[in-house]
Length: 577
Image (cartoon, rainbow, N blue to C red; front, side):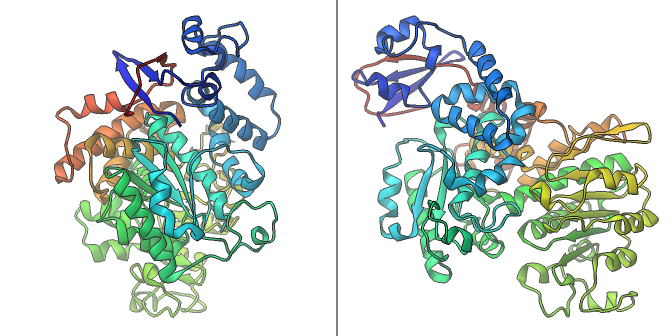
């Protein structure tokens, strides 16, 4: 890819390209291509007047034209493919269209449609987007990274596809998630698309259907593990941070134990976070903070069940514990109020099936010996609810229909307004359907879901179901980290982000309204989150070159999807912006 120079003239972006750039090369570059949006002046200067039809359309006209095509597309996956095709053809128009119709297109860029896109990844066209590093090339990682055609990368979303949503091991299909999440960094966080990079670490797959599928595009080999896996990831981290020393790395869709071990290994060495662990925890905390406002309760007084003891569930438990400690509760008192259930039931100190993640939140055996249960070694969800009397129930189990009528009615015996978050994705994996939760709780449950659900009518009210989606957190968090030039990502940043987000919850105006705002507010929310996260990073003293004016720095970083003026320049030896 030829080098370009990006500059700002006031609020407008100007792009200078090499004198000898070929018109077809220009039209094939999604960051430069405008299609029918090239002006007459640009067509003449750039030599594209002969390869485009006569009409010149504004970006607004192009957006309306594409919307008509989008509405005529029938299936969800076809809509997703149409959007990806536009992104690969004209990136500015893609973001302008998505910004204009954010609420309508959101489910097709990400959940629930992205789950099907990940499953069908090898059969869809994704263009030359992102970086694929396959294990057989392990000795060439530095060379591969050096060949990335970008001089600046601010944020990377990297996956090995080990556990995609609730769908399991999808190998390189996880790249669909990385592409989707970086789209949100740009759409809502304003990170320039030229400065983002999705990465797939292709370490094989243990998914038998993929291994036997001749169309599968990844390395058709069982997953590597142990020291080989560790060395491979380490080589990637060293190469990418050598090339881009200030880059923010977001770990995405790694299997439970890999996700936790990678986070522990790198969180104090490079600027990184795991969205499935920390991002999920942060957005869940925002929902809990909002629910506390709706019920008038205090976090330190809650009793919480985490149904699902994977990396997401334990991440949520960890952040709840930290938040309780901020309210003056000791660590032991906080852990005493958090009940974690895995596949074998409630985790307690004498459970024989505990791993390190669950052991940290195991309940004391002498506490639960007094409970009325059939088998102390396999305490069920309903038994835990009857004995612990929780006020909050959070699901990350990927086990559908487990928050049933008995569960909800039992919770309702002990708390007037139960807080219930069935968070598993995609929709087919959700622990409950909001309509049922509203009906069984007689309209009193405070609900947030991982996937989008339609409003529910009950008792003369219309209940809008808030989506507890990480997109409400990570774009603003990342923007704040980049603005502050933070060298690390800390737990306090996630709590700061959660508190900021919670203030936008509609429940502040109506005790029966949603716990989360709609996506149309996200650009404003991301700016607010970014400013507060940047201030937190500066206060912690973990920034390379902290900005003098945080608000101004955040504003300057937020790219707007409008066409840059493109012109030929002199021979360019470096790229900037």
